[in-house]
Image (cartoon, rainbow, N blue to C red; front, side, top):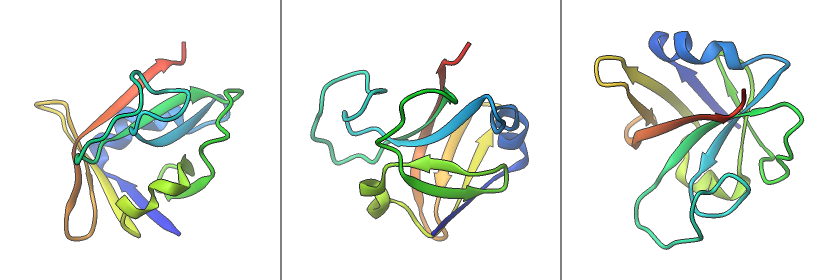
Length: 119
């Protein structure tokens, strides 16, 4: 089971999406799935995105529950190898820089937040 905490800055920006209208996804950006913007690719980088989608969106690729301090979000099960059991997302508002961190490492220093799939 994974646990993820958003810092106060991230909570202020994202809490409005953790409700009955949206589903919040932790997307491993590997070129696979309905939200990819380019074909499958081979890279040594780990790239994650938080994607906000409407509640009625087909999200069959996202079955892994990640418990957060804002509510549950979903991820791709096969991307578990890149995650830590305990994680946090921080937002540096001066630079609008989002980071996904594990207990002893930075997992993704340039986490993207994607809201274009919702009105």
